[in-house]
Image (cartoon, rainbow, N blue to C red; front, side):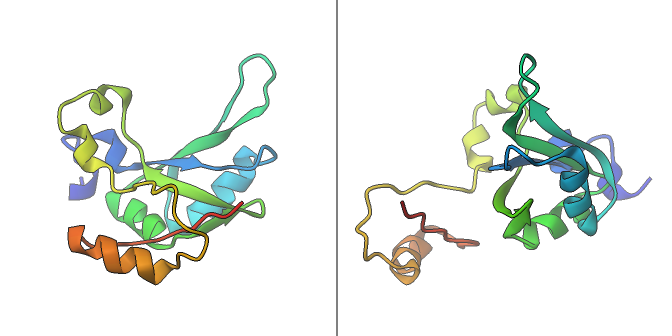
Length: 139
């Protein structure tokens, strides 16, 4: 058994949460996009149990950690014409454990001036660690 499939590894190492999905995103379109980086063992678009309408997020699970890394390194991702946010999945059980917040690598910074540019944020936040991606959202 390859090291990356070791049963000692937590499932979230193989699994990605995909947020920001279009409500029109289907299982097929999600699978088709993310299988570019490896073999998917599971793929699901979460739906409201009553209306069956997409809830705007889903999950994909790869066969190896290396495939998850490849998908994460290929960001940004566009599915069904929309930029989506893949994140390493964290189980509810694990999210309750002390130190779980240390696994989170994304922060939200609100209330910034309209003329703030990416290099301003990078210059300030690099003192705290390596920055992978900066996204400035506008109304």
